[in-house]
Length: 619
Image (cartoon, rainbow, N blue to C red):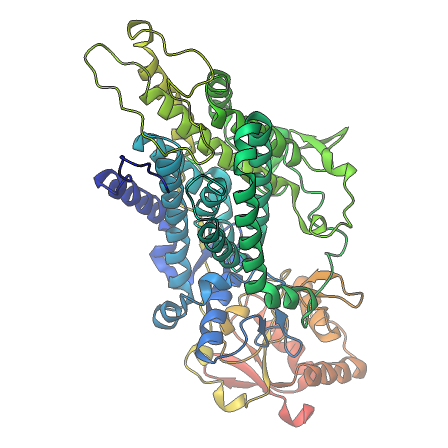
């Protein structure tokens, strides 16, 4: 059972495993290195708003746990309506367990620690899956695990989107799915474990779980086509375990999923189908990603319309194609990888084929799919390339393992086949399991190992990640961090920061909430919520006063104000349940102070902020 067979012990952890995990941890530290120079005041240069949002999420986990409030909803942003956290990227499966760390160290430190740790953990579980279930060579598993954890597309998302690097459960889920129905296994235990894993992953990243489910569907279908007799023998146990696991996952997540689609501030689809048109440029597959040692930001501006989910560089594409050609005859696993690569490469193209930054006249596969279908309307085609990246990681491990088992020079030791490394049954090619002929004599293949290892190294080394770029951000005012606001904000009232947080005009003032542990609610914010028609839109619908503030910021000049503007300002403050308006240091501080003074009257200078106590105005 498991990874072993009768008469052969399980493969136990050893020094090689420890070295592999240590190397992954060091890579995780390297990726986050630029944050640690001033971790409290640095955010991602590429996605500072997303970075601030996730800091806020870590504080949300702490606040929900310590105040015993419903973590599926937050009233501390977008006051007074709040935010449906299940309908947003909330990372509850991480932020709640790490709440004590956030309380002790703050959300900035927790963010940086977790980001590097999630990258390393994903590589480590990928290494475990490969070394225990697919390949014999631990070096092969290390290479494949490193790519799965630190692929260019994954590191790209590490720029402010830690939910897309939180993939440490996915290799375990895949390994569990591929072992369902095997002879001698308990279908009840397999189903229960799978259900628990899937339920937990829903609270980490639903989108990556969906992509994993689609990939598993393709893998199982490819296996059934190529091994129909073996698949038929496993069918009963497979379906029983799958049904039990799916039922358990649904039972555990039924209320959160209902809340996501029917709870307060839920929505149906995104206005205008924002993501549906984002496909991967064909040139992106052979281009080096921005955050790799061979990457170039200038190329990104040409073809990087959205995200860098493939960006493998031409050497890796060339080596991967050669490896597939050489392995597909001998290895069922390689054939399944080839199917994954083809299916998800095509799926990542989107509704229109793009080439070198320009749209062609060729329709892509998504042009034939209605964007009104459930789930499809929220999917971004380019992210299908993340499955391609995972398949390439597995292919690298298979190729390295095949080289390690190539007949060496006379007198050298050939690794003995290890039973039980094959979750699908005869996936990896061995001299006895291969579909093709046995290896040729040693002398004729003596050159293959060094050449093969060199080719793999030259393909992978240019993709080593660089430290993510970070930028300085002004710390919150002392008035906020020292608690000077407390006498002005009674329970049930909000603090209105100027400018009001939004996804368009930045989130420095949202960090006031994050870095005080959600001590006070704020209007506006960075989230997806419903518009008047129930469609999802980014951020809160602008009130007239928030629109006036943003327009003044953009122009840098004080507009002509009327009594209607002043009356509307009071109405908006009353809607927000405001008790105080606060303006801290800001590049447009002078004109914003003039604007708020013209609307609300003279300001008080309290500590390092300008303050308008509006309780007499709003009642």
